[in-house]
Image (cartoon, rainbow, N blue to C red; front, side, top):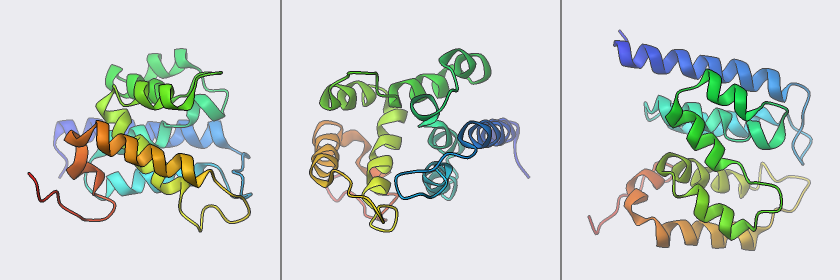
Length: 166
């Protein structure tokens, strides 16, 4: 049975799924697959760890950058922590990538989702038919791990590794 907090998180996650489904309807990624699948893979990773907050942010993480969904709608329909994380995950037009990554990681929730966003962008199955900027992505992962080590254990949800230093 879900407690009240979990029920609220589940409701927000369901709302995010619905909003993302509408916003990404008919859009494809560089491989020609439905664009929403990337967000759903990230969300599943956090959902399987019972982290509905990060799962919700993951579903929405590209919605401002890749669709017509507005910041106003995001701020109107989602709690501040979710809206702020999604905004932090959105690269501004003309923003230098390293500056974007630093700004993104000023928000702990956004930083964690960004780490897995990059991991998914490096997945060879996802990249079928296009060549991602491997060097930039690998440097970005290194940058996050070097500059934001406090999230190390959360980063390793993907691999199941534990930080032996803590």
